[in-house]
Amino acid sequence: MLSRNHDARNAVEFADFISRRRAKGTALAALAFLIIQGILHPVFRTDAYAQSGLRSYMWAINAALLLALILPAGGLIWGRRVRELVNDDVSRANARTAAAAAFWVAMVIALGLYALPVSQAMTARQAIYLIVLPTTGLAPLVFAWLESRALRDG
Amino acid sequence: MGDELKNRLRDERARRELTQAQLAELVGVSRKTINTVENGIFVPSTVLALRLARALGTTVEHLFQLR
Image (cartoon, rainbow over all chains, first blue to last red; front, side):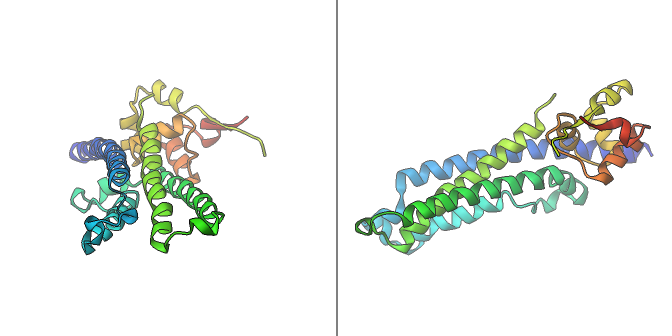
């Protein structure tokens, strides 16, 4: 019984530690992504950088990885108990809220792009980039903020 | 429909001299869940409300009230 209680305490404390680390890591990854894209903006470049096949896809791969951070999955090495505690109802609700916020931002940007004059028309890739970039940056940031708030003592 | 859910979770937990982590262990949830319920950020499911009440030796009606 003592061992079971000890394991339960360890699981709760470890899950708390992992959740805090995930919130910080998610926010840092999202900020790094937005800053790097702000500097490189690969989809709008016409120089040699944009000609490289892999480079032109890297931002999309990074965006997909970033979105994966808010999925209630992963952490196989922690064991089932810790995984359940980290990806609990609160985290799943936070992920849903973050996804909903990103959805509305995507819709507003998409409608704004559609309303642009024809003379400012852009390629489909550029339009997708302008929609996906802020939303994939926003969703993890909102998730990280909600998680940090949930973990704040008091 | 404008009712607000209030709870006495923090008071009841403190009365039993339990930390958030200890109550989380008893209930089988994360400390984050206890913290968000106490602060009114997260509305617990019926199952969780029943488990909290059982762990604290009280009733759901005593723990949670509509105001």
